[in-house]
Amino acid sequence: MSGVVVVGQVARDLVLTIERMPDDGGSAAVRQRRELIGGKGANQAVACRQLGAEVHLVGVVGDDQAGRDVVAQAADDGIGVAGVVHRAGAPTALLVDIVEPNGIRRLLQDVAAGVLLDAGDVRRSRELLHAADAVLVQLQQPGPAVLEALEAGAAGGALVVADGAPADEDVRRQVLRHATVVRADRKEVEALVGWKPRDLAQTVEAARSLLTEGPRVVALAAPGEGNVVAWSRRTRGTPPPR
Image (cartoon, rainbow, N blue to C red; front, side, top):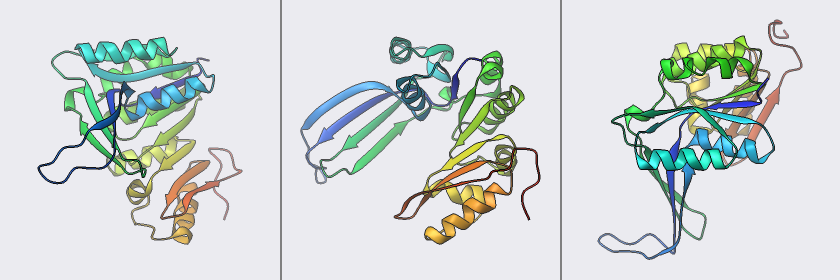
């Protein structure tokens, strides 16, 4: 087996810390500036590597200096980058994270369609996915790429973790069929269950309903309450308890 394979976004991340947002027509001095590898997929890959796992990344960057820089940084961090595609004619995604001292964050995203994964990109890394112990799939990628990653991970017997909101009902069904663990934030929960939980009790209800559709663990953000984590003791493939 080959540890963890993360399928998701790879980007250049620019983090700017300021004292406060300027008024209209005004300006603000930057207190701290950091440029580093970013994107949800790459961030998960870095986190897994920091925990000591062997990690491979499947994603897309542009065929530009920014793309070469972030891939080199991933490699320097000990992450396998053979699954990262350099897409000609597309600019590497740029994420600008503006941070105020009180913890308020604002995110500006420049993500061209050309740096999103397609099914062919994922298929080229199928051997990595088949051999993985765990496959982390970012659901913000296009549906065909997500489906390819889910099926390849499940076919190899990996623990499949799906993070985010599905693109459509077909992707939703396949996520719940193949994923061992499903994770969603407050905005993504509605896309998974078809309705919007408004409090902790409703979030627990949503998590329990998702468990009946296949996953063994469900982690959902609850309004103002942190996260609800629900799990089932049954193994995949056995019918849910009545």
